[in-house]
Image (cartoon, rainbow, N blue to C red; front, side):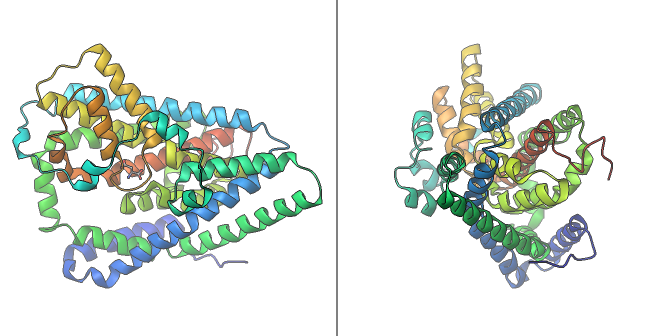
Length: 418
Ligand code: ASP
């Protein structure tokens, strides 16, 4: 199906939508219900398409690529990239929190009660998280949208299909090919609606802040240095570290940032990595020339296991609370924080506020009490939106770097020019 292209480039449409959403939220906060539904429907469409798209795309690309590409090497490179960048993010967080000392002198007596959803969520052990990658009930995995288990099933099916010959397996490969093409077309349609959806989401986010954005600033101010530490860490990782990495791979960081703008805005306005998967897949393929095989392998995996922003955030929170408790961290505790933050990124779901449960695990691992965590809830929603942006940006950076090493022709290649 041919979908007509609008005249204005997508990122310009999104900039206009964001600006309009901010103005609407600021000046008509009582009327956000009139436009908020557009954002809700956009988010539901993305979630609707994400799981089947990931499933079909992975099977069809692995079944097709399995014969020609070394999937083991692709997987290893992806995991190394994810571990490396997550480690860099963690080190950035630790450095900043040690330099700025946001927790020194903070009174934890003001901390709000933690919501039941967090207190009741029994944290899973790491081994449990790894075991649950293999689903015992495929239908249950789909119903609960367990992305890691879905990715696992799709890789397995695709790999077996690529090694099976005969008419029937050819038929199956064609079925998954056709299905993934159909779902990509639906994704493209959804992306055409993105300006309206983003407008609705931003307007309701801005308009929905109790007491208006001024209140948000005041609250942010009371946790000022803490908020600043998180924001500067996230900003540094996204704009400096990732740019240097892209540069080293001979890619153009600014062009990549611009082309991924819709993914970033979707991550920001929904605080949900999972919802950005269809958008990232479409943009990486159509705008940057990443192959379907690479993108469909790297992006869904990244949305679930690669959380640069989240792991940075988790470290800052834990060290902030340690400082507020007047507790000096020894070397072993520091290493524990780094390792648990690195590994917990795998277990953090790509949904809003998922990292709070993981933070309770890290606090337990270094022997810190949970009280005080309620304090950071004041600014958590806003920081969640920002760390989701960094999470999804890391996935797209990995996709283009891996594509480059696989010899794919990218529009953001320094050698290519546009
Ligand atoms: N909201 C984040 C994401 O979806 C996860 C988290 O840090 O809570 O990537």
